[in-house]
Image (cartoon, rainbow, N blue to C red; front, side, top):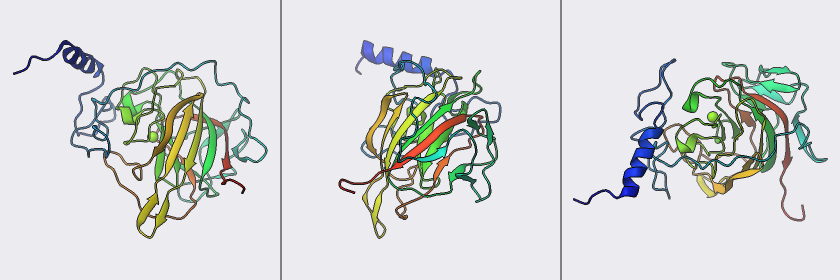
Length: 279
Ligand code: MG
């Protein structure tokens, strides 16, 4: 039998030391139990050596952003659709089509836990989206239980993850900036909890020919000005512990913000609808 190399031994020790929360298994975490930092028995991700939410997948490298997220630094340009300007939720609805029920105060929106996702009343296809979010401080919970939310395109279909990933071990494909369950962020670019963070997302919608996807959805995203997804192609809808694949849909859909039970704040939300050359 081969002796393990020093590098392999060190790597194993580092991985083991990283399991500060709870060993990966398939049991759902109870209310007060630590949240899992990975799962066993999940599907292999196509084109990857890793499985969905695999605990051993390397943690994204930390890159400390420069400066701070200054209010008003990314004011909406002239052709933007303003989704939240600090005043009201007139552009939003709840997940049943009723009035949006999240809290608005002091120029920000705060998730009202257990009221459900919030969706734009209008529908969009290819967009450049800007928003700012702030995880609460002091942080509560760990792994996926710490300040979890997300930006969703086409209803609850394609997620770009929001999480307080600051000194918080979780599975790599669940960190802030991840395409949940598919691609980790290229780096971990979050600021500490209690600070505002910026998200700039360029999302292009998938195209279908009947039941077949002929062009996958793609995303390029920046957190705090640092690229975390570089024209990544969605493998299909976002799923927890699974890879659901594509289901055909129309060219436009609502944009959603996730209620995962944590009082995340949002401000300065706007988008530009992307057009082609000469349009
Ligand atoms: Mg989420």
